[in-house]
Amino acid sequence: MRLFAAVLPSTDAVAELRDAVRAVPAAGDLRWTGEAGWHFTLAFMGEVADPLLPELHTRLARAAARSAPFPLRLHGAGHFGRRALWIGAAGGLDALRLLAERADAAARRAGVPMEQHRSYTPHLTLARARHDHADLRPCLDALAGFEGTPWQVGALSLVRSNLPVSGVPGEQPRYEVVEEWPLTGH
Image 1 (tube, helix red, strand yellow):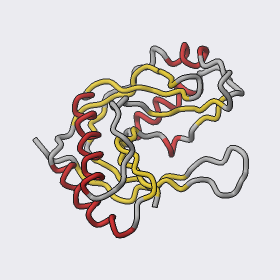
Image 2 (cartoon, one colour):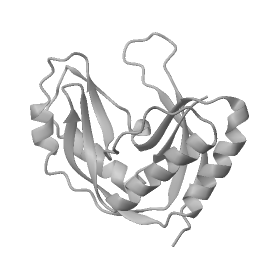
Image 3 (cartoon, helix red, strand yellow):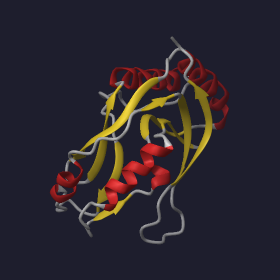
Image 4 (tube, one colour):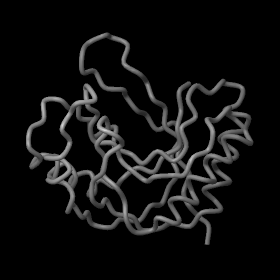
């Protein structure tokens, strides 16, 4: 099962972002992610063997229980190279980073082979360029001042990523929440 730990934006945050994205100039070089795929990845685990799942669930539940709810809002825009356009976050960034560290540690302790740890950049991927020559500037300019309404992050989600299998151009991965744990720490 292909899994990652994530924070999901509130319904209101998704609606605000949808409205902002509609106002972005058309860019044929970009493949836009669907709203169902909007999330803040905390720890990408890749393929996780079934025997590791019970321990992973236990450890992620423990990470959530140690983490208090925190405010977050969608904020600004950025990019990774010339290939990925994203929306950033503001608010409880220290709490978000700590939750990402705890989710990563939970996966490692459960025996999931994780990529080498890198510093966490909170982002929600909006679009990916079809090639390295895409001009992201008009999109970045249109979204640079975006400020979403704060919401309270209250859960850690374990999400399954189902990659496209039909071969139809433009098909998006499908995401399903496998389990969700409330943040109950103080």
